[in-house]
Image 1 (cartoon, rainbow, N blue to C red):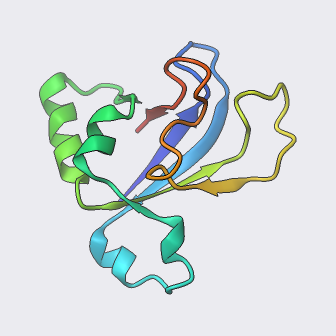
Image 2 (cartoon, rainbow, N blue to C red):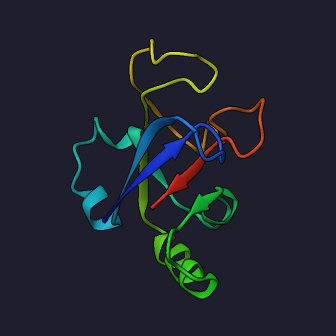
Length: 114
Protein backbone atom coordinates (compact mmCIF):
# COMPACT_ATOMS: atom_id res chain seq x y z
CA UNK A 1 0.00 0.00 0.00
CA UNK A 2 2.75 2.52 0.94
CA UNK A 3 6.42 2.87 1.78
CA UNK A 4 7.58 5.83 3.88
CA UNK A 5 11.02 7.27 4.56
CA UNK A 6 11.89 8.10 8.18
CA UNK A 7 14.36 10.86 8.92
CA UNK A 8 16.17 11.71 12.16
CA UNK A 9 14.81 15.26 12.17
CA UNK A 10 12.86 17.70 10.03
CA UNK A 11 16.00 19.61 8.99
CA UNK A 12 16.86 19.79 5.26
CA UNK A 13 20.03 17.71 5.77
CA UNK A 14 18.41 15.11 8.03
CA UNK A 15 19.67 11.55 7.88
CA UNK A 16 17.48 8.78 6.51
CA UNK A 17 17.20 6.51 9.56
CA UNK A 18 14.59 3.99 8.51
CA UNK A 19 11.58 2.98 6.47
CA UNK A 20 7.97 2.17 7.18
CA UNK A 21 5.81 -0.22 5.22
CA UNK A 22 2.05 0.18 5.40
CA UNK A 23 -0.30 -2.65 4.41
CA UNK A 24 -4.04 -3.21 4.50
CA UNK A 25 -5.76 -5.18 7.22
CA UNK A 26 -6.50 -7.90 4.65
CA UNK A 27 -2.80 -8.31 3.86
CA UNK A 28 -1.93 -8.18 7.58
CA UNK A 29 -4.42 -11.00 8.27
CA UNK A 30 -2.66 -13.15 5.65
CA UNK A 31 0.75 -12.80 7.37
CA UNK A 32 2.23 -15.74 9.27
CA UNK A 33 1.56 -15.51 13.01
CA UNK A 34 5.30 -15.13 13.69
CA UNK A 35 5.38 -11.93 11.59
CA UNK A 36 2.30 -10.21 13.02
CA UNK A 37 4.00 -8.91 16.22
CA UNK A 38 6.27 -6.76 13.99
CA UNK A 39 3.26 -4.75 12.80
CA UNK A 40 1.08 -2.18 14.59
CA UNK A 41 -2.38 -0.94 13.77
CA UNK A 42 -2.57 2.65 12.61
CA UNK A 43 -5.13 4.29 14.84
CA UNK A 44 -6.28 7.90 15.01
CA UNK A 45 -3.67 8.83 17.63
CA UNK A 46 -0.77 7.57 15.50
CA UNK A 47 -2.17 8.98 12.26
CA UNK A 48 -2.59 12.47 13.69
CA UNK A 49 0.49 12.63 15.94
CA UNK A 50 3.25 11.35 13.67
CA UNK A 51 4.89 14.32 11.99
CA UNK A 52 4.57 13.20 8.39
CA UNK A 53 5.54 15.21 5.37
CA UNK A 54 3.47 14.72 2.24
CA UNK A 55 5.22 16.48 -0.65
CA UNK A 56 2.92 18.02 -3.25
CA UNK A 57 -0.29 17.44 -1.26
CA UNK A 58 -2.52 20.18 0.11
CA UNK A 59 -4.07 20.05 3.61
CA UNK A 60 -7.32 18.48 2.36
CA UNK A 61 -5.41 15.74 0.50
CA UNK A 62 -3.21 15.06 3.54
CA UNK A 63 -6.29 14.65 5.73
CA UNK A 64 -7.76 12.21 3.21
CA UNK A 65 -4.54 10.16 3.21
CA UNK A 66 -4.44 10.05 7.01
CA UNK A 67 -8.08 8.95 7.15
CA UNK A 68 -7.35 6.24 4.58
CA UNK A 69 -4.49 4.90 6.72
CA UNK A 70 -6.72 4.26 9.75
CA UNK A 71 -7.22 0.56 10.42
CA UNK A 72 -4.23 -0.42 8.28
CA UNK A 73 -0.94 -1.74 9.64
CA UNK A 74 2.58 -0.33 9.73
CA UNK A 75 6.01 -1.85 10.19
CA UNK A 76 8.96 0.43 11.00
CA UNK A 77 12.51 -0.72 10.35
CA UNK A 78 15.22 1.55 11.74
CA UNK A 79 18.57 1.31 10.00
CA UNK A 80 20.34 4.15 11.83
CA UNK A 81 19.99 5.33 15.42
CA UNK A 82 19.48 9.13 15.12
CA UNK A 83 21.70 9.64 18.19
CA UNK A 84 24.70 8.01 16.46
CA UNK A 85 27.08 9.71 14.01
CA UNK A 86 27.33 6.58 11.87
CA UNK A 87 24.87 3.77 11.08
CA UNK A 88 26.74 1.23 13.20
CA UNK A 89 23.83 -0.67 14.75
CA UNK A 90 21.95 -3.54 13.18
CA UNK A 91 18.57 -2.74 11.58
CA UNK A 92 15.69 -3.34 13.95
CA UNK A 93 11.92 -3.40 13.82
CA UNK A 94 10.15 -0.88 16.07
CA UNK A 95 6.55 -1.04 17.21
CA UNK A 96 5.23 2.52 17.40
CA UNK A 97 2.47 1.50 19.78
CA UNK A 98 5.26 0.59 22.24
CA UNK A 99 7.96 3.07 21.18
CA UNK A 100 6.04 6.15 20.12
CA UNK A 101 8.99 8.40 19.30
CA UNK A 102 12.19 7.36 17.57
CA UNK A 103 14.33 9.93 19.38
CA UNK A 104 12.71 11.34 22.50
CA UNK A 105 15.55 13.82 23.11
CA UNK A 106 14.82 16.10 20.14
CA UNK A 107 11.80 17.66 18.50
CA UNK A 108 10.50 16.55 15.10
CA UNK A 109 12.39 13.31 15.54
CA UNK A 110 10.28 10.98 13.46
CA UNK A 111 9.42 12.93 10.34
CA UNK A 112 8.31 10.77 7.48
CA UNK A 113 7.93 11.37 3.80
CA UNK A 114 5.40 9.53 1.74
